[in-house]
Length: 188
Image (cartoon, rainbow, N blue to C red; front, side, top):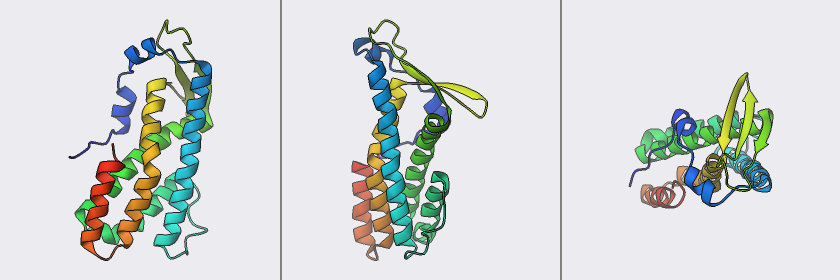
């Protein structure tokens, strides 16, 4: 079963789930909890990426990349030789990287450009959202957008770890088993 990654444009234009918010009104506390959850998940991802880069590079990358985007790119580059040998590995690395970069955009907007939170505690408007402004661009991010990113991020630590382990796997059959597990369990 192949899954299609959401690119940044599709993520931004994806319709909000108005029916869900009208049935289950979103409070200010829930919006704040979503922001905190996204930041916590990113902290876990950053630790995992750093750990895996060090493992894949035999511990020599400790003082390398600093930004999240640089760490993701370094993790991907350390698997280039395996990607050249195993097409499935390359496809999965690209899929994970695409999802991480899409979610990183929201994380950066929250971390560096959050200007407001609007809640709808009574379910009247169905428009609970964050407002961000970064690099002169204002955006609204609905509660369903935040939940979507949290679902993606909740699987990324394991996907990063499983792919990194598969990259170090010498037996292609064992690596293939890891790929099946990644597709079934970590890339919903």
